Image (tube, rainbow, N blue to C red; front, side):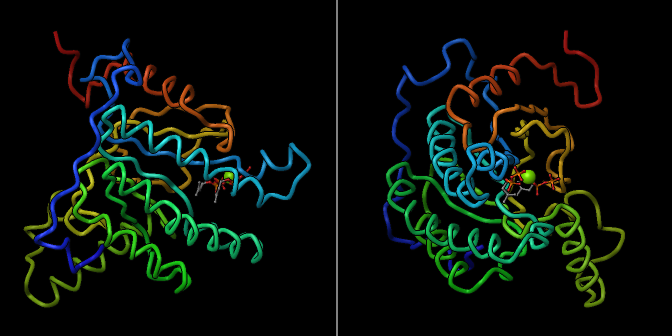
Length: 264
Ligand code: IPE
Ligand code: IPE
Ligand code: MG
């Protein structure tokens, strides 16, 4: 996160007024998930299917990111978290990893206009400081430029792992206990939450995974405790508004109980 914070005397950018025809008339506003997390999967398969190199799928996935984040913002989703690179993804061939890092860098630069226009607050979670410097610099700059925006939070999970996030939080807690600034008896769920990558991140309501795989792959383990899960066979580069609408419609019909009983 950008410690410098927003410029104090700048006018806060307001999100544009939602266009009614683009809302989902059959889904009550209260049933729109406040926080969506997406495991963007299937880029490689999409490209292979067309007889192309895997990396073409990553490039094509950018259009899906753009359309999805634009639509989420219009529908009133408060936070969209996209899983873009896992701590395990370093296992991939070096040229693919390098390509992804270059793509991310370009994304951080190219999206600034759209982020500004829609008052989106761009942020990241994960061991982001370990990314290549050229990528990191542009990501941090986009975070800084959008830090005082009032619209939807667009959060990229980069060099992210749910287990690494726990381990990193445990390390912070241990350091504070060792320094005498935190008592073991005071460690509760809220104390752990405060030491996650983005303590202000709300619990995820809906997790969407593309490309048909029925697994979580180390995505947001803490924040998805009670998330509803929606898996679509669409590959990420194919994912468009109708797929997002289908996921939200399915979410709206789910009965969430959080361990309690059905409300009367
Ligand atoms: C998701 O697509 C993008 C990343 C994990 C970076 P994949 O690259 O995993 O595509 P498939 O699953 O191999 O088709
Ligand atoms: C999950 O996709 C990671 C991201 C979308 C960034 P993977 O393709 O890496 O997951 P697995 O290997 O199929 O579980
Ligand atoms: Mg995959």
